Image 1 (cartoon, rainbow, N blue to C red):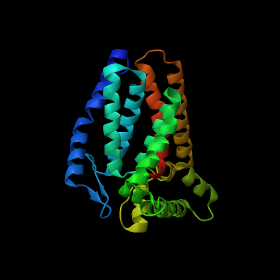
Image 2 (cartoon, one colour):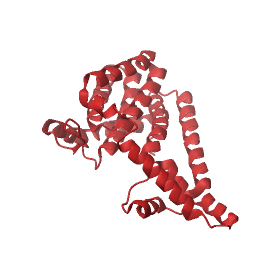
Image 3 (cartoon, rainbow, N blue to C red):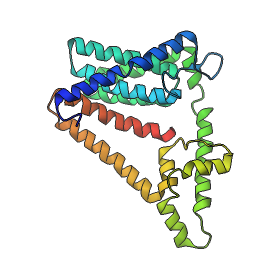
Image 4 (spheres, rainbow, N blue to C red):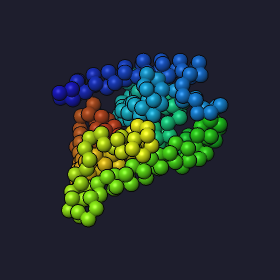
Length: 267
């Protein structure tokens, strides 16, 4: 309904841009006052109006994808506003220190740059390298990318998977075990299995593993097929779009599908 006409689609983009105002104000206030989640002496993660810096970071990737595509598609005032929004989102995203959001933003900008302006494909890695080299807190966040919270996630995944194998195992009843693993243990079971192991409730921090646990191999296969269908549909929509308003929206969607497939590996 909201994308039924170019005029409505343009309103959706305007409203999405307006949605950044309040989170950006809160994020800027947190930067100026040093508020947020402290990871160390030099790293304080802002979260805007969200409950966690990672959630704020993923929202900012959405904003970046939409308005980067808008900026390359238009000229004049609309281009200036779009790239101003992208710049604001980039500054806020850096201060979330959400590595998964940084990766997603690089994916989005690389894809949009490959389509709209090839120079962006080379410029984005150079700017990223410059920021890492000149901003000590960001460099510190990336010193050990496979350690810290990521190592915690790997341990969580291993324990969850092993607990799923044990819970679905019915001894010598091979058929029953196979059916359990094909169908899964039901919605919410991932948190229960993690609690059984750690005596604390955690999210699975991996949607593929969560779907496997809750909906089994059959559910995981459907989930992967859904992602492929979304990706193909987004690509076809972009390639077939001729309307100036709809082309950048379709391109944003295509880039976001790929970046979200990356997000859900660790979040």
